[in-house]
Amino acid sequence: MDALIDLFANTQAALYEGVMQPIAFALGLGNRLEDVFDGTGWLLVGLIQIAVMLLVIGPLQRWRPVEAVTDTHAVHTDVIYTLIHRLGVFRVALFLGVEPVLDTLMGELRVHGIGTFHLEDLWPGVTDGPFTSFVIYLVVFDFVNYWLHRAQHQWHWWWALHAVHHSQRQMTQWTDNRNHLLDDLIGAVIWVCVAQLIGIAPTQFVAVVAMTQLFENFQHANLRVSFGKWGERLWVSPRFHRLHHAVGLGHESASQLAVRGDATEEGATLGGHNFGVLLPWWDVIFGTANFEPRFDPTGIRDQVEDGVDYGEGFWSQQRLGIKRFIHALGFSAEP
Image (cartoon, rainbow, N blue to C red):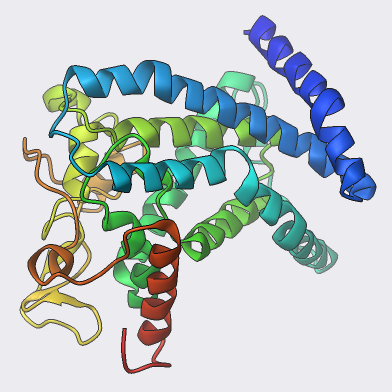
């Protein structure tokens, strides 16, 4: 393990010194070299993730697909989303535009006596070990992700953005990053705030994010795989998560009275099943799990049944997401 860590650190340093640092100076970012170095680490993580997707998850999809890939344009659009996120374009924007604001906010909180709680110090000698603390942080962030995901499906203004993700009817390993950029920004801000409050080390934060993202790629894969009766209850499988994307099931909850603005069909409201990102435990505990052995078609009901347009390409999906968002906030009559 130490050898792998050293290899990563040496590669990051070489990439930074040989490529990223000269670019930073050329762009006038000499005063942000620390952020550039951190960004180089994220870039390297993204390159490793893409390599795993191409060399491991891709062959698995071809080995046992759920369905034939017929809409290659939709898949190519998802690849664009993945490259934007994994090659650092989104994170650069976060570093330059949002992180300074968050740093100021956290500084103000500390001035008022609200400091960082170091979660790994709960049980000295036990919880502060590298592996143990990593597992603890992984579980904590997955718990946060569960409730964040439920909010995306419960609040209509947030669903208006999150629907970009669910409008994919040709799910593959690339679908994970198919999100509205504002949706991603909200989630990233929440993650950074939680990271600051519980005191996770930067290296462990990178590891938690990287592992979570890579497994999300696997879960979105066009892959007919289930982990069996007990495995499905221990770790989220492609089958478990595909059910979350299923038309009329994954993002709808039965209701005797549809709530105006939240209705996806008569007698149903926003909600759904299988919100867990890595661990299905939260779905079991909070009653949102569905373990039916099914591989349903994916998409949104009004998209499939009524032909509602969610956009075909990156820019149209982003534009229509903003229109739905404004409508959900009550500022326009037309979605």
